[in-house]
Image 1 (cartoon, rainbow, N blue to C red):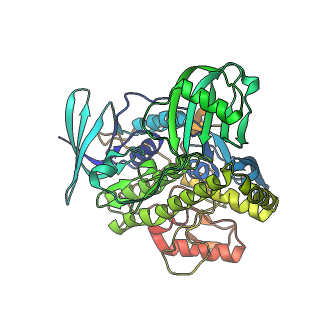
Image 2: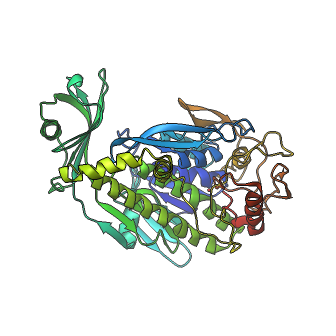
Image 3: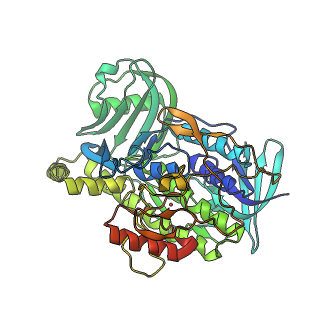
Length: 514
């Protein structure tokens, strides 16, 4: 029997990020992952703006130093809405690029490395078989390479994907929408790449989505709107993918040498509560939807950033246990929003000629800057606002703290992104601090060096006061920061009142920012 503070079931990007963040706070954490190693799959590979901003505040991505020169400037990336071009996703110039390419496998490997460096025990090849919740602990059984192992934990995070054992064993209730389409995904060699339409392509018979690599393997997707596949879990074959591509496009699509084949659909599920006692769900275990726009991966990573610090402070005794209830209150509406917008996009994608006027209307609306920005912020989660907690009525409460230049006593912390970055390695499992060294961040071309800066506040002590904010005319000190929260740039008076509201809220001030 092994006891730990937090047991994370599932070692994909979401579970590994939870573990890495808990490890930073010195929380004894164990990860159980069924796969013996990271598996490269051609699934979601996009980090949207709000996810990138949150990860930057945790030291996982580089971020520009906020300066007066950058204020008022922006970054923009072209994207799509319902498969059609025209959407532009923007972010402030003081933040990372609004759209970043990162594969799930790359993220999983990186977060696992960070978790292990921070003392987390990662047990691969361990498949959870049972979970029983008691009043003071959660008991988990897992089948590993050496047979059955038993674990007890104060809290369990189920990040074990769409077919979550944690969710099923504990009977989490959920709202669902049945599948209406059938889709196939393959990583294949297109032997006549010039015959394949690149990108998102609609015909009267369906859609194809192709990331064509004329020299290697291409990511190729077909979407059939005639109905769901009669056997969703039957293996997809190369012949079936080839035949469906020919049916949709209208001519032969030669392909060979499949490295990966899979089915998916638009089945959607949202659990009714992300928490059941001492057990929490995150990522696809809590919510799934049609894969359009890469929103599922981002939604899960934002779950991880939101939950991890709350668990850490609860376990350290520096927050009341009601803090954990805010995880569902804040993250479930975000999940509902993504499910609703992906269903709306799929409705626009249906190859019914009767929808052509509606598609044309949406295309015209995207030409209006305010509409384009609204939809871009929806896809990138920059519209997310969490429920107000202080009752002071500030319109900035619950919004993400922007990366503004600050006048501080610490020249190495010139802005909120630098101030929020983890500043020391967590204690190893033996309780002794690990060695100081440069971390490995998810840079513009993969892993790169990002040095942790400055001493960090301990969870076991009163949070160390942060710097004074002279630039905003605020003479009070900000509390210890949380991963990634925010407030957009506001007129000085509004911003001053918003920050004072956060200061008054004390630890719960995310509230000024994750």
